[in-house]
Image 1: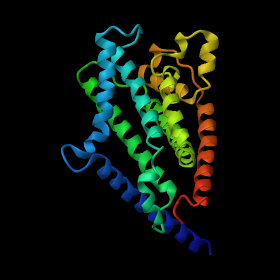
Image 2: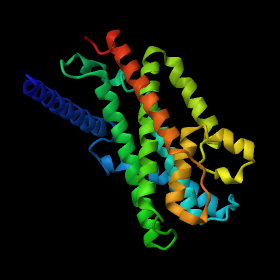
Image 3: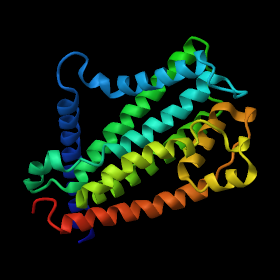
Image 4: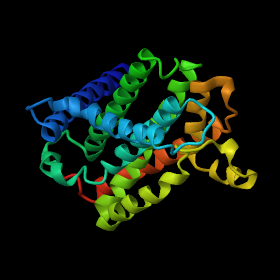
Amino acid sequence: MPAQEDRNFFSAFKTQRRIVGALLMREVITRYGRHNIGFMWLFIEPMMFTLGVLFMWTFMGLHKVQLPIVPFCLSGYATILLWRNTINRSGNAVEPNRTLLHHRNVRIINLFLARTILEIAGATMSCAILFSFFIFVGLANVPYDILKFVFAWTLLAWFSFDMSLILGALSTLSEVVERVWHVFAYLFLPLSGAFYMVEWLPREFGKAVQWVPIVNCTELLREGLFGPLIRAHYSITYVIIFNTIFLFFGLFLMRYISNRGVDGE
């Protein structure tokens, strides 16, 4: 009996993996098309945004940090693109794909999985290519602790996935949620940790912003990037607990909207 259950589980897992893979390819084709550079826009678009901000900081004197400006700016804006794009794209994941939900094996969470995987992959490729390029030309150094850098990026991607589930589910229930989030996301940028280090802030304000998971992830990422050049402030335990709670909350909302018949059953 347990063997039968294991076979059923792996069979269902393979089915869902194929569905997410097919939805992922559909998402790439419908969003970027088959012409010009096609799917390469997936990571070239974030690269263009990052380079624009980087040049503005470097050549217009908009920085006063005592760290190498290129990796500092690149690390900050790359984190913004990761969480902002991943969460923003989740708001309209259902409506354009509603007809697909009438297929027996397609579930609403598959739509969100495909979209978030696409955004996280695009931001990750963009970050890796840009860092590799600037390291090659001598404007950035190899990360001091690459494992810590990757771990921080993974935690931030996990947070972005959780928030995409929550915002996507709530946006399905009400269009107001997505509109409010876009405004909040812009207002939240100065607090995200992308443009400062917690060490530079007044003590009480620094403690306050550490309640924001993104700030902890960015601090950890920059510690992996700069090593002893900085004094980072973060709590890995807090981020993991926060992400776990929000993951369960997001999955609960996914189940709730599916039971309401949003998945087309």
